[in-house]
Image (cartoon, helix red, strand yellow):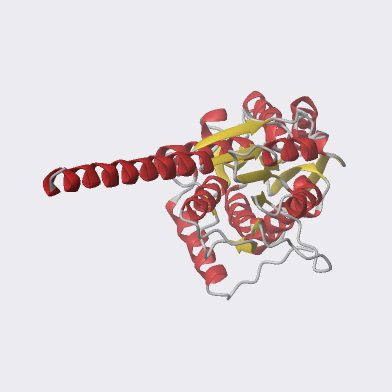
Length: 338
């Protein structure tokens, strides 16, 4: 066999080997880049928190080329088993738990599956408990965004009475309430704030009829603006808002489309952005566990002011609220939650 033929055979063998290795690597990579997510109470279609999370998955699929699998545990009772089902799958390497109710379950599952990565949105921080290295706990400064929509409500109300409806009595939803109340009082010290909660359990995030009933009561007690932090139940608030020709403030996502003309603004949380960023870090092998707490300064929370609702927020009010935003970001105003 001549030398040229030997060289050609060697080159073909080498190229074939390189091609095989490349295909194998691509196959393994595609298998690794799959995400799993378990929804919070209310599930997909809540027009709020869960839908924001799903939007993040869709963005990750479009921008990063990943695939994903979701589980809706209904009332949330099976969230631990749902997390375990996703973690046990070889092709899923990053799992999200959406909601503070997941805190204990996702912590335990992360310890059980140290080779997988986990993210909990709205994780409840306990200084006495250590977070596993493979778990990213994301928290938001809801009180800061709520302070701004509270200021808008306090500057807009005609009756000097506004309302707040929370889904579940909990430390997380209390942050929404405290921020809103403090924001209202900052611009309108003599304003009256009506505060109600739908439930002491997660059931409060999917009880629209009860939310509507509470909203009607608050409107009948002179409130002309109601801010809700109640997930799917907020759709009941919007029904009351339309029926009684009042105003409401949405939460998590821009909820204008749920009651066009009646949504003064919405306090938004960049849940979709956080899911996208975590997915990007995972794909780039730069994922890190720990705590990430984001507020106005980090653009993790905000309020809606656009072509749809700007006619409801006069220029002088918008200017005042932006001044308040800058003071919060600069530390001149400290927004606290008990």
